[in-house]
Amino acid sequence: MHSSQTGPWSRFLIYAASTVLLAAPSFGQDSPPRVALETSHGTIVLELNPEKAPITVENFLDYVDRGWYDGTIFHRTIEDFMIQGGGFTSDLQKKITRPPIQNEAGNGLSNVRGSVAMARTQELHSATAQFFINHADNESLDSYGGGYAVFGKVVEGMEVVDAIATVEVNRPGQLSEAQPVETIVIKSVKRQ
Image (cartoon, rainbow, N blue to C red):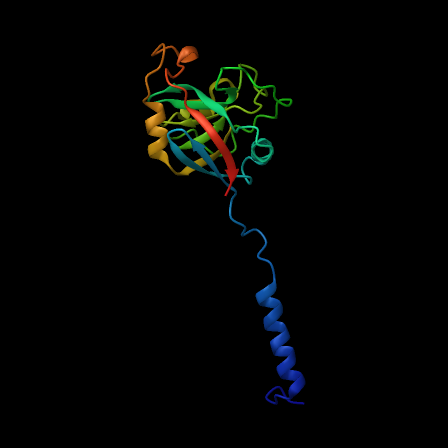
């Protein structure tokens, strides 16, 4: 049979081949996971980067999927620096977390305005559940004390971050005591 002939089998093979191509999954082209933080000031949508921060994203999503962040607060807000949350209830009770994760700072993502990173103690590998959203470009955090691991960015609701960052705090200028006077609740955190 010549290639120019189109019998029933040729048409079937062409149809089958095109169907397989259309149905084939597109590996590596999945959208990055997105998470919506519904707060008492509005909604913030984060796009996470599992390629650059796989351990951190997996850890964060596990807390999200368990509803762990629901009802927590932004307990530390510093204008032109960051807003931090995910560790305390509205009555300022510290939540018990799972063990800390490996710090993934130095992954090519930077602590710039709108990026989300893991909060930690002075210990390099001490991040658990608390996170912060950068309100300004804070590239010095990329290397300070070993770095703070960025694992995503705000893609919607930066105006909400701005509103939270500018609330009145109990001791302005004190990095460890910049607790908002009003309670800023993270009502729910869910995958989109």
